[in-house]
Image (cartoon, rainbow, N blue to C red; front, top):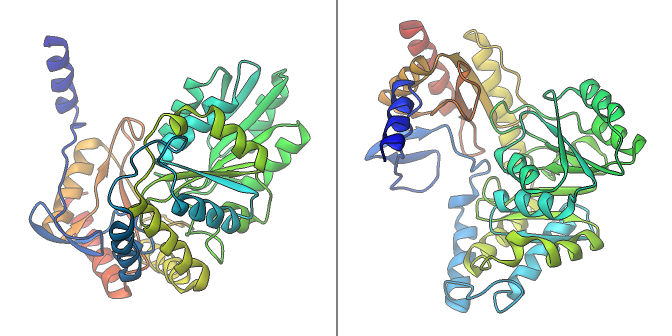
Length: 382
């Protein structure tokens, strides 16, 4: 225990200690955190569907019809007609032959990458990929080659420098901390030239980028071999998924350990996700509102001195030192705005940020309030 105690104290001494904050209201623009009413500027509930009345009613109807839990894994007794309906809906939305639901996006990346990549695979992975991609690569038997963040020239040089029988390029589309978007067309071009598979994680892109919110393939109008995603962000529910051709999906059903050995997601959250996809597919007004809010907030932040130009809802404000980021975050919380300080190991040491996110449910008055308060705190503390 002494070793653990010493390590914990070191975390605290370096301003890296994390505390869990508790919400007592829905994941909406105005919520209550630790008893304090705040404007929420850090949620992945990008379209506001977590608290959408139609989505909530669909889940209520599902619990009345199916009960709460699924009762088993998907390959025993846990598969419901709702699971099939959602998988077919996701596949159609992503223009793929098939889809497979996982319990969350993390398990999707772990299960997909580790199942596909045997010892003959070379895995070319962006250095800022999400932890779930990194861990999926580590669990696989493939050789991992890291390329510089969003640097297609470095990627191509490393592909050319390695001799491999089989290979795959894995990347986030929208990166979860910086909010920047991978150069998917060039990645696809390199993959085709060198006979590599492409795997793109659309967790922060689904329901967000592209006119219809279909993600990176729509945004760039290009074909991706395997797309991983989540139901817990813009879709407003829970779970992860993978899309691809029929053989890929059939293979994963038989070889992906995180799919095979997990109790299936509850029909309650599956029904909510189905309702969310129906809303998105029938009306893209929420997506357009989100994209307008992104542009508006970035423009306002530039006027007060921050060089931001995000095309995604993730808008980081660089602070640097961990203690300063914590103080900035606390000052904003005192003003009624919740934006957490993101520190190592999520980002590099000395590169702490305030990770701000915008939702479709924010209005311009909310965003003006945020811009003004950030400017006030900056002038007082920086």
